[in-house]
Image (cartoon, rainbow, N blue to C red; front, side, top):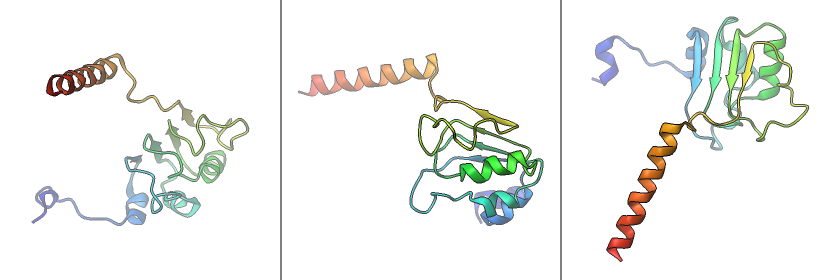
Length: 132
């Protein structure tokens, strides 16, 4: 049995999942198969009060369709820190959309993550130098 089965979870298709979720948070790479994955049709399957969060990659969500849905009140809200073109272009359909939080792609840029990455890089450089 799959690990999730013991907790009573059931597999869902993406389209079915979108109709059920209150919050959809994207965590996937941008590939040929994920580009435009959340297009107007899929966004339209979401609950009217659902929230979409994309901190994965720009291009996965159709930005014009998302902006339209927010303006028409067909989606509860959205938060994005990634965009099709970064930085977000002036005149983007997202500009001025209601119930939308936009941030630059900085989710992992904290003092703690910078210190951790810096230590990791320094350790690897030291190891490489000692091996040479």
